[in-house]
Length: 129
Image (cartoon, rainbow, N blue to C red; front, top):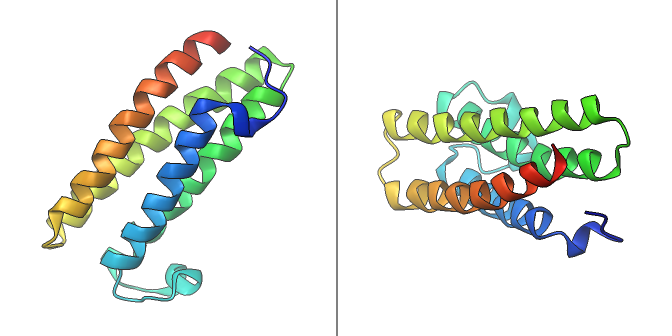
């Protein structure tokens, strides 16, 4: 399905929502409140927060690559990579819980957003394979 703009693509909008939520949660759970320098921290919690943020930012980029690619193998590679990213973010959520984040309701909100994104992802994926 061809879209003139990524803004019209439901999965892309959902990915941007996931980015926003990831940024907010990373800011909340990290010990180092400077998200730009989060990667410099030695804290496991900060490393996981940074990983959530980094992976969430990659999803819209990979969606754009799939949408604008004419190569089926490149599309498949990026679609598969998005699936890996989704699993990774879920793993980081579990890691944050194990690291002692007490406000698990925020982590559960991120999981719910990922679950919602996955529904869009499955439909979108079937259109591109």
